[in-house]
Image (cartoon, rainbow, N blue to C red; front, side, top):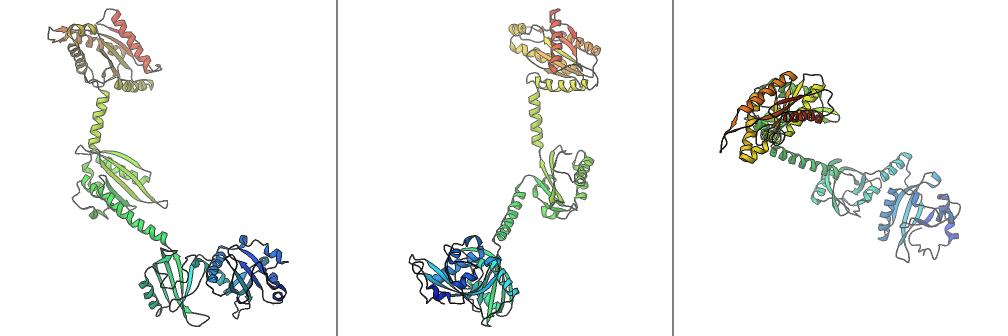
Length: 538
C-alpha cells in the first residue's frame, strides 16, 4: 500500500475487512503526538496486541529511544515535503526483536498536521545478525554519521547527525568553508580515508568537529559513496584556545610582577624565571638564559649575598627534601636588604613535579614596621618604653619566673610633688624633670633592665635576673642620683626627688595586676613615710 490510498483519519477509518486480508502489516502513526491511530490485523500480530483498542491505548512515549524519536522527527519534515521513505527498522514488541523493511508515506489531516502510513514489506536484502546489530549501533551511537554519493549529495544520516538540523544539505554545504569541502571531495577521489578537524555548520551556528572520512562502495548502486563521521570537539578547541590565551596572559603577568619568580622541575633545573628575579639577585642576564640551569649550583654561588649563607642553603635543601606544603621565610641580606621568600611545591596528579620560589624585596616594609613598632612602644616625650611595652615585657618576665628561672624585680618610681613643679615653674619645666629622670634611668641601669614611663609622672623599671637585695641597692642609688641633679629652669635652678616602690615577680602571682598592686602599695608607703625614699613589698 502506498500514499495513493487516501485515508481520512480519524473521521473515516479504513475499510478494515479489506486491509485485514493483507498479510503485510499496515499501521498509521501520529509522530507529533506519539500515538498509534490504526493497525490492520497483520500489524496487531506484529505489535503483539490482542485488540485494536489495546494497541491504540499503548504508551509509545515511554518505550521510544531518543534516537528513534530523532529519526521520526526527520521523517515528519520529509513526509511534509511529499517524500516516500524506505528504511529498515527493528521493533521490539513483547521484548522480541523483529526486523522489517518499512515504506512510509504521509497522510495529511484536516487540522493541517500529517501522520505516517507505514507498510511493512519484505526486503530484497537479507541482513544477518551482525549486520542488524551494526545498523542498530550506528543509529544509537552519539557519533554523527552521514553518507553522501561521490558528488557530495546526501544519501542518509543517522539520528545523531539528524540533530545537526542540516536538512538535505550537501557535503559542501555542511562545511563552514565550502572551498575546504571541495578540496576534500577531490582528495577522496584518490585516497580512501581522511582525518581532519574542521568548522562545520550546526543548527545555524559554527562548531568544531573531528571528521573521519571514508570512501567506499554503495551496496545498492555499486557506485562510490562517502561516509563521514563527526565528533564535536568545540569544547576541546575552546579549552585549547583558552589555554593558549591563559599561557600568554600568565607570561605577561609573570614578567610584570615585582616578585622574583623561579620555577624548577623535580630535578632542580630551571623551567621559568622572570626579570624581577634577575634584578633582585643582580643577575646580569636575560631570564630565558637561566632555563636549564642547575639550581643547586646557583644556590651555593649566591651564598655570599646572605648574612647567614649556610642557613640559606640548608633551608632550601630542607624544603625540597621534605616535600612539605607552602613555606614563607624572611632572609637577611649582606647588603642590609630583607627578602621574603615563598616556597610552593608543584604537585601534579598527586606527584611532586617541581618547586616554585618567589622572592620579594621587603626592606622598606621591614624598616617601616620597625619604625611603627618603635613608635607604638615608645613614649614620645622621654623616649622610654610606654605602658604597652611595659605590659608586654612584664608578662614575658613573669612567665619566666613561673617557669622557675631567675628572680626578677620591679621598681615603681613617682616624682614627688610633681603638680607643684608644674604649677610653680610651668609644664615646660615639668617636662624637663620627666626627661631628666628618664635620662638618669637610661644611663644608670643595665642593658637588660627596661625603664618605662607608664603615666604622667609615674615610671616603672623591669629588672630581670635580679635578687631583692641587689634591686634595693639599685633603687637607693637611683633615688640619690636623681635628687642630686638640678633642672636649669629659666627662673632659677631646682631639684626634685622621687619615691620608689620595690617588689619582686612571684611565681604565685595570679596576674600582672597583682604584681603592679604590690609595687604601687610600696611606692605609696614611701610617700607616706616622708617621700624621697625606697619602700619594699615582697
